[in-house]
Image 1 (cartoon, rainbow, N blue to C red):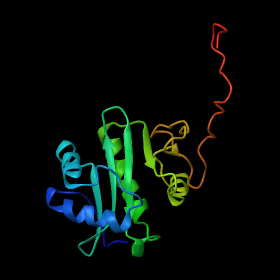
Image 2: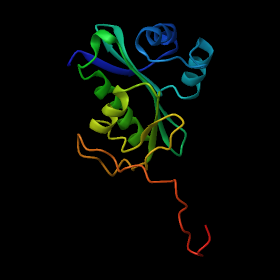
Image 3: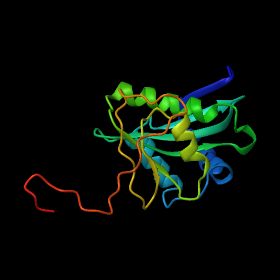
Image 4: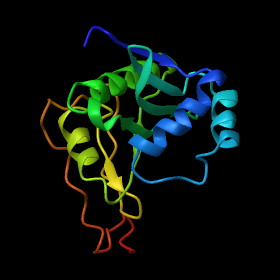
Length: 171
């Protein structure tokens, strides 16, 4: 994997990224257009990370930080390049970025039908915690200083079907 290069996207990369997402990413977003991606790169020039091999984009991740929480989305790897450590390298680069920026908590957006992403998160993402499909309650988020051992599962989702007692006895 020594020929893999991770770097921030530049404005000149945006059309390539949009074309890449059409073939490699699952689902589409209302912001999957030039204006949406330009806004991202203008606002946070280091947020869109690209993995390149041989000068070609083979993976992406958006590693955003709003000053309070770190956010991951658009993790995509070219179908012919999967299972070669590209997603792991992108997530490690995202985590390095988050730590450098002072991020202490993170979350990730995962499409409901994406069966691979939650498994990847439990097995490798040390962004510590909670990936839940949209519309579901995420698991408790862990801090970046609280790593999960590789292959371990985050804490279970709390049962929110019953009221939780509060100190004054009212629910």
